[in-house]
Length: 528
DNA sequence: GATGCCGGGTG
DNA sequence: CACCCGGCATC
Image (cartoon, rainbow, N blue to C red):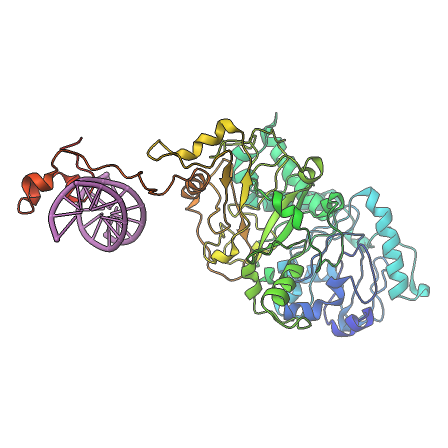
């Protein structure tokens, strides 16, 4: 598999993008090199790390050297800016650096039925990465294009035709589009109360939105699932995965066999569905029973499920989507993992909204110390949720086998009595600990603000639960945490001495019974 | 077996 | 929440 192959196979117009921080010919740049098959067979690979690699492909499969404003004479196709003129692409956002960015994948020609191409437009604004980028880009150029064809670049990145001069107007357009997009999808706006306390909520929210939008593209390693194309109207800034650099347990690149079992012990959730800081890492957790495999890529987890649990052919890329049922998308706060693994709590006590339903652990946990289960409440679909027919509240409640591992929360002895209920029982409580276990089918998000325990199970094309069950779920969790001894011997209320309505009135005069007696409840008339 | 009532389902 | 009932413990 090499670029030539792609060039020959790809009949698309210009393509810019594809992130690969560890470019290995024949291996990575998965986006580009595997586009034809990836589109047919399955989700796009997830890019997690590394520098960004740019490549221009021309219609007809010829290579367009990156030559500034000129298209390659060999290329019989058009490059992106020309596509814009024709209205094919909506990738209008070209920053001052001339870098194409944030184009909606849903508008890629591949989804328009014109070609199997997939576009990923990256905006690399990070100056630190630019140099790296430039190097990688040049390297890529040398690899693809004969050096003789390489001309000095007006930009160290992707050269952009001069007729697309980076006007401030364009920037504003980009800005506006970004803001609008974020506003229309961002839970920060929809759920302002969940936003972190700021001195200037409004402006801060906007900044957040913007920084999110840009940082996500700045990371240069976002990805989106192939199935995402099923939702053409949700161009959402992808989650930034650049934090995986900080994640000691993970390694970038192909992580099919990447296993982070330990991390699953700290997977708790966050009501904030959207990554607000770059410490969040999207992970994919296998929900197969007794399998806590956590991978950083959807393709990896899908392959894991497909091969390990479903017994599918390892080599086959074919996927009927069944594996989507067996993993969930989670967000992990890298800070929490690195700061202190010893202290853990299902939810952060400092999250906005009411406190968690269960008593907070005695060990204080930093605000950031949590693992954010991506909120299904979020209208901003994460990578996989974009594939959902609706972007809202996709929660799986079936498939009990998807239960995540129970989590035991150690508490102090002073809390031990909580499990005894109201004293209706002999107090078979939970001893010195509160055992809290929740399962993904039960764990739902809570309504608007408030701590949320969420597991958004990633599923494609699956029926999902609307977002109504939240509260009861929390209550359910509470019940799980403080289980009342279920009708243990002696817990039943002893029969009263007084005659009840039944005895008094008899079956014939049942209408004279108290309602409780009628409903076979404890008699209310002749109480003991 | 009769009685009391808990737990759960239904509308 | 009212209504209803299965099922269990107790008498």
